Image (tube, rainbow, N blue to C red; front, top):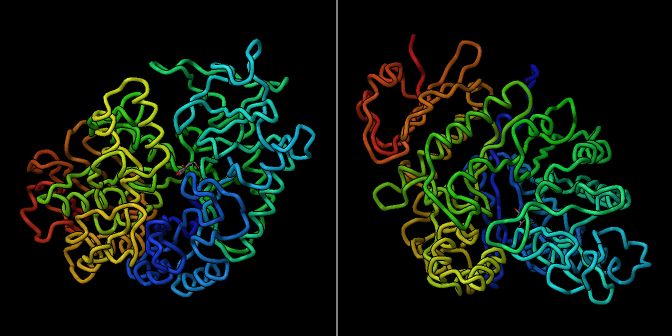
Amino acid sequence: MPADPPWWTRAVVYQVYPRSFQDSDGDGIGDLGGILQRADHLADLGVDVVWLSPIYPSPQADNGYDISDYTDVDPLFGSLAQLDELITALHARGLKLVMDLVVNHTSDRHPWFEESRASRASPKRDWYWWRPPREGRAAGQPGAEPTNWHSYFSGPTWELDEARGEYYLHLFAREQPDLNWENPEVRHAVYAMMRGWLDRGVDGFRMDVINMISKDVAPDGSLRDGPPLPGLPYGDGTGSFLCGPRIHEFLQEMHREVFAGHPEQLLLVGEMPGVTVEQARLFTDPARAEVDMVFQFEHVGLDFDESKWRPRPLRMRDLKASFGRWQAGLADVGWNSLYWDNHDQPRAVSRFGDDSPRYRRDSATCLATLLHLHRGTPYVYQGEEIGMANAPFDSIDDFRDVESLNHFAQAVAHGEDPEAVLAALRRMSRDNARTPVQWDGSPSAGFTTGTPWIPVNPDATEWNAAAQRADPASVFAHHKRLITLRHTDPVVALGDFTMLLPEHDELYAFTRRLDGAALLVVCNLGASTHPLGELLPEAVAAELVLGNLTDDGDPAVLRPWEARVLRPVD
Ligand code: NOJ
C-alpha cells in the first residue's frame, strides 16, 4: 500500500436493488423517489458509498440487467432529474454513488441490437455475435447452434433470428444479446456513455460480469465448443469467455479512455465470476490501471456440487482455505472486496448463519463481524444490516426471477421431481435477496402502499428497521459499530491478515497487524460452546474492542455464534 492509501480502503459500500428498496408512488415497485426518502437510513448506518443496481430504461427481462438505453432512467424508477437529486442528496450526506455498468450485453430492445439484427448489411451488423448454424445443420435444427454452450439462465446461449437466418449469442437470457467487444466502435460507444455518467457526477461503476467481454475467437471468427455438461445436451463454454485473451487490454483501454486523469475519487469494481486470485492480482494491481477491486465467487460456490441447484453443506475449512488464499494472494498487490450477500445470492443469515429464532440475531452479527474485520472493502446488501432472511416461498408461482423460472422449467422438462427442484430454489434462488426491504411491521413492511411486485417476507412484523434503529443490541446497531471501527481503526482498514486454526470446524479466528498494533478476531460459527484456554490462550487475556453478544461473558469461553474483536495484551 502506498503511504497515502486509497479512500476505499476505509470505506463500506451499501448495495441498493431499487426494485425492492422503497416504493414512493404506490405501484408496488421500488424507485428513486423511495431511495431519496430513505437516504437518512444510509447516512445513519454510516456507509460511504451506495452502489445502485440498474435504473436505466429496460424491458425488465432480468430486472434491469437488460438495458435498452444507457443514457436515461426508466420511468418505472423515476427520471434523470430524480437521479440528479439523489446524487446531490447522497453527496450532501458525504456518500458517493456508484452506478451499475452492464456492457457485456444489452437488451434485445436496445436500438443498437435492433439495428444490428435489421439486416446483414447493417452498419451495426458486427456489434453483436452473429454466427451461421453449425456446419452440416440447418438453422433451427436441434444442435444447430454455433457452439454447444449452456446459458447461465438455462438452454443454449444462441438464439436463431429467423429473418437473418443466423444465431446471436446471449450468455444470459435470450433478451440479453452479448455485445461484440472485438469491434472498436462498440468499445468507444461504451466509453463515451461512461464519460457522460461521470460528467453527471457519479462516483464510479460496478461492472457487471466484466470478465466476460473478451471471447476467445479464432482468426477465422469461429468459437469453440466446451466440454459436455453431465446430464445436459450442452457444454461448458466458460473456457472461451471468462477472462478471455483481450480482457486486460480492454480494461486498460477503458481506464485510459474514461478514468485517466479524472480528478474525482472514483470506485471501480469488476464483477468477475470464476476469477482466480492470480488473475485478480493482475486486475487490481494499481500499476496496471484496470479496476480497484473485483467481486470473486469462490466463497459463494462452496456449498453446492456441480451447480447451485445441487446444494450441500458448507465445510468450514473450505471457507477458511478460500478466504485465507484471497487474503494472502492480495496482501502485497491489489485489494479484496468482501461480501456475503447481493441481489444474486440467498440471504447470508439463512445460508451461512442460523436463521432460527434462537440464533438469528447472534449469527447475523457474527457473520458481519467476520466479514468486516477482513482486509478489503466490505459490501452490505440492502436488508443485510437488519438480518433479513430467506423467504418462505410456497410454490413456483411465488418466484419471479428469470433464472429460477427457467431452471424450474428446464429441470422439470428433463424429468426432475418438481418438489426437489422447488426445494433447491427455496435455498438458492436469487428471489430470496429480492423480497422488499422490511422498514416496519405494517402489512407491506413500509415498502409500498400498493401491492408489492414480490411478496414481503411475513417475518417483517418482527424483523424490521424501525424496531432495530433504537435498539443498541440490534443487527443494525452492530453494523453501525463495525462500520465506525473500520473508519477509526487503521488496523481494520490496512492491517495484514493471518488465519489461525485453519482446520477447526467451528471457530474462525485471525489476526490483523499494523505497525506494532494488532487485533485478534475470534468467531464461533456454530451452536456449540468452545473453551479458548488451550486453543487460543492469547484471546483469554485480551481486551475486548467489540463483541456481538450483549453481555461480555466469560473471556475463556466462546458462546454459540459469538464474535469478539480483541486487542491482545503483551
Ligand atoms: C450479474 C448480475 O449481478 C445479475 O443479476 C445478472 O442477471 C447478470 N449479471 C446478467 O447481467
